Image (cartoon, rainbow, N blue to C red):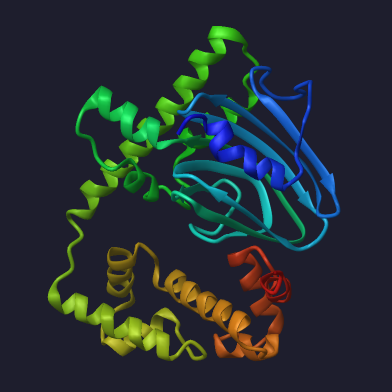
Amino acid sequence: MKSIETDLYRGAFQGWDLKLLKEVRGYGPEGVLHTFENELGSGEYWAYFRGNLFAVNAFRMNFAKSGIMRYRCTEHICLGCYDDVKGMVQRQGAPLAPGAIMVYLGGENEEYEMRFSKGAVARASSITISPDYYRDYLQSRFGDIRDVREAFIKVDGKHDLPELVDLLRKARAYQGKGIAAELFYEGVIAEAVALVMEYATREDGSEEHKALSQDDTRAIRHISAYIADNLSGDLSCARLASELYIGQTKLKRLFKTATGLSPSAYVIRERMEEAVRLLKETDLPIASIGKAVGYRKPGAFTEAFRRNKGFSPVDFRKSNSVQ
């Protein structure tokens, strides 16, 4: 990569008609500020670029109509935290939520896609690092290290990394100039990577003690298939435990070990994924889709879907039809 600004950002800025401002207001003076205002909405995007290595970002967007944000990208890692977000869904990664860590792993010549609904909002701070940093630079300094992209995957969607959230917010608020700014932003990237690597190492250590027995593995496979076949029915913890002839405490332990989720969270995830499929692939009424995934009342389904995906089912179906 010759320049992270040119190779990764410029095409997206041009595609979204973001205009470069001469004066940087409200952000670090060593960065650059772009704004947009058109029929889709309005917003601003600030970024500090360091050659071919990294960028530090902050942005605010408000959308007046539904649509899809697309652009072609190069390989990179983006890590951020939203202070406010609703009505926005990325193609990959955990659901976007205020206060949660967001990770996007971009592939070479891959198309980035974000769907947004009418009234969607986003306010976030983030960093972007190139393979020249996380592969070449770190390898040259520290030798053979673990796959950094693999480590970043482990923090996607996490709510228990307050140090990382605070670091991103400090980067957005920083007002220094010159060499002080260069050192500060270098430190932000290094500390962010360190926090991610530390978290991933802790997770690896805890997972070593979480191996399931053959009987437990068979139980999880059975109950996962049962859930998939009964999304419209009773999938309470009590019912699932009864299906396996075990107590609810053991059921919760098995699910946490095997999936990282509680039984109820796993059921919600499976129901929402089936709802997404039905919204995309069928013309079934919203109420019928809700019943098919276990929600007797349309309002309850709409609220659960919005909470999980950031869209109402109606808006999701509309945005998914945008060409």
